[in-house]
Length: 386
Image 1 (cartoon, rainbow, N blue to C red):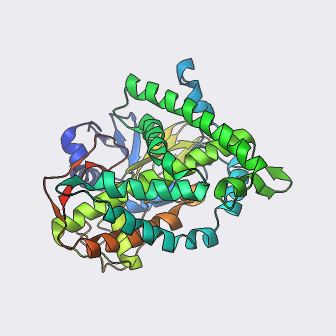
Image 2: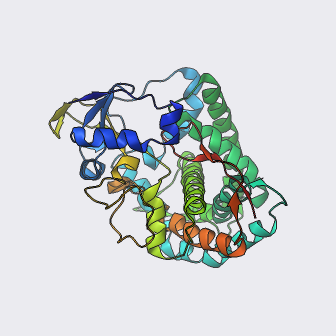
């Protein structure tokens, strides 16, 4: 296996990781990324295979060790279906899907469209940050409405979410950890009280549906409810914010007119995805792609690299809305395929064409920059005029 070096917090890499991916992809199905001290997969075939290989999972079979000061964060993560394997994952995902139905998501389309218009109506005069006023607000308000949380809580929910997600970035510091712990405590306290209110006063919202969801006589515990709500909020807006920001920037930079067609949405997700690395643990001693993994070893699946594999996509660096749809890895794969994929696709399909129709003169006022938050890949701001 070839060894490679690339700091994930290096500015040039953060701004454009794709040349690095192009360099390592021909080196074989796996390379050893020295900076992470683990193997990584960059080719589409390898990434797609490992996403579905049940010998690898999100839950460390050897258990987690962490400082006591981080316990509030990891106590929430301990009930996250994103971090669990069967049978707990199967049970949790089944209960969530009983509440997070395709019918419920489909019913949001008119509401999403109207919210797009309302946000555009409130755009300030002069240059402004489109992330702050549009790409961030849309998904967090929609997920708040879906859960049944007061909409005026959206800024606070966004702040808590950003702090917790900061635990997963490569350039994590003690300050990030402290912020994540405090956000975990505050988020848990808020949801504990709110869930109790919904037990006594059911409404037509996702929290009430999650409380009522039952499978084989089992329901979600309060701890599982809290974690599931946090997961749906964090995952339900974080990726969409980055996808919208990246896609809007690409369209503005290349004079591309967005549409609501499925082909445009899938190309937006493929071309510059919001999550670039998703790690898996070997659940047992495993031989895969010429490498022997010991139980508990990790492998990095480079989703952004897989999505630009020239063996799968012709001229992969070009954003081509007419590209014939082929499976991409932006939503993961296997049992951990993103539960919120239908909602994310709907938000992108509505938000992009509405924005460019309402603001035909929309233009950049300064070069956009990506935030230094790898494994995620999203802009830190997007300054525009309309």
